[in-house]
Image (tube, rainbow, N blue to C red; front, top):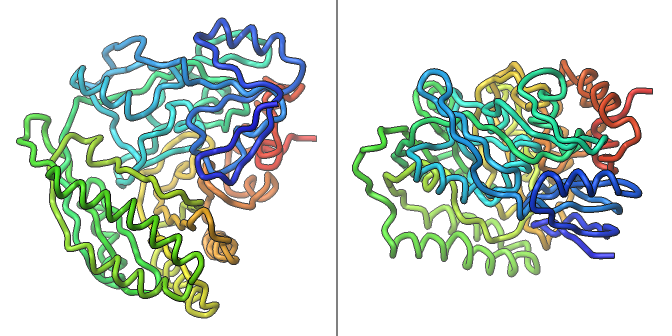
Length: 431
């Protein structure tokens, strides 16, 4: 057996074999010959057990690159990309063609297949997650055949399906002409950020803020879309190196110290918040959207109704104060437009995302459970690629098309070729 672990180190597996096919034909042969279960894995950046298996683990690392570029509607372009392509590589290839992803999260190390299958999103009330830009997929199913899909129930499930419906081999993304982002980052106060966020959602293309627990300090980020020919003013080499040192090397050291001595965390957070003096930059979109994250952590994220944001943050703050539990990572707040993807956290409702993190070496001390309870109380939906405790019975109450998803799973994979413990828990099969 070959041991496998995800990026955060909180999920482990001992698959019977790890294979790296180079094309869809090889994947079809692997599925056809598999004696048991099969799962695919990209970058392993999900915090859940979505890729964990004791069967055959198929790495998509050698199935990469752009296959086809075709005109789409209204000035867009449909780009078909192989499923294992990392987002940062796709961004470079798109830029060389004068194109860009419409929106992105703040990490670009995921594979295309992994990012859409777990509901990766960025921020912006006018923009949906990556899955909402998927207009076609190619999928190897449990019958070991590759099929093309552009509509229908299986397409809806495959563009955000946790790997439970087959193995993605290629994805067609609806892209836009390349554009520039102007980033404006400023320190501020939590009360002001909460009061202003509804207005930012209406007036700023891509707003977000980070709140430092044990303080009332935040870092706000407001990114504005600009034409591709806008003069660039990127973060300077020295400034970027200093930021990277603070956000990765120094932050790693501080978290190692605070793991042993949690009582220093409030002071550490005050110092971290004070260290951010604000900055602006103008650069191509993907370089503003994404940043380097080398400090390992675990994460939970819930999508909640926008009007519940102040209540949720205040309740989290009250729980931290009441329990005296020390939280070293900022709480991240973003937003997204409603979409029509069946398992999207933004399915038919605009949402605000609240993400909480914990250093990978520290126990969460009930922190994640408390945040989950607070978010659930306002009808929150958990991010599929991040930690949560919900099962199919509860998730069914949150997603109007949930039973359609489960029924489709039973139809296309009746013998559970692509099952694992995680998919069995969250996509409970109908009796």
